[in-house]
Length: 345
Image (cartoon, rainbow, N blue to C red):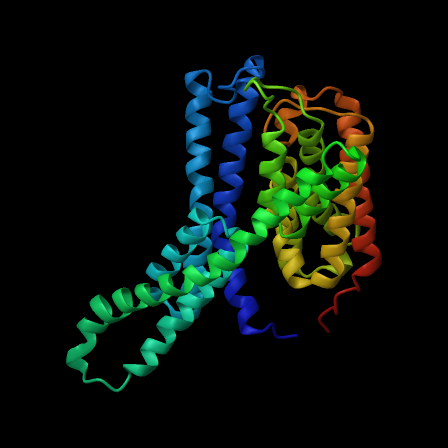
């Protein structure tokens, strides 16, 4: 079945931004692994020169993923003139914390603004070609895109603040419920504003009132549940290969690495292709993993999950058990809900 144009535009952006996510996440994970003896210090992850270099490199790659995502969505819509306004739209989404959703919307807006400018100027004489390339598309296109991004970010940012306040109201009342909510939020938009709100809330729990670093049950729940999101999609392609086309099977190979590296974005191709089946599945599995981790009182001292920070957990067997149970729940739900792909004749 032919996919809609909007789907293809978004997938073009996703295919270009995934390498930034994978490489950045791996670098950050290695930074904490090589700085493991200093887990109780405020400088954890950057105490020695090598870890600091890894952390800086990974953070730069991570900071570029939203601009790249938006730039190549706009490129897919409007060709090369879309790259500039799309990249700036992604950077505006990054700085204003509207995240993955803001970058997608910004990339589409930038692309269609450039497309509209192309149509409006299509009947100008050929002598205006230079003006279109150097002034009309980049200057007017960028100005209009940046103006629209003000409205997009203004809508998303209050949502983030509201979610953070809601999480704080749960803390201490019911840790199991809080763990389930954190896990579900990490999965619901896979790196977007809801995911980032839950993640930053978990990271903040690693610091005591006097500023010292403390092991955190909330971060433990986040660390375990975040790993299940991409891992379950990857495992589903292995256990239920007839339910996925060739592109998703290829995406599943990368999702194995991303899941083990605590990168939720590996699930994005699956959610885009089969949202009604995959999204509830990964949310449920992540919530189960987070609830179990909180129930067992599992703690971690690192502000990130993944196999590279396993030595920093309070109980390695329980860490692996919670991850395995959550992943299995999501995988089996995907296998049950997703129908077999139509095979070519």
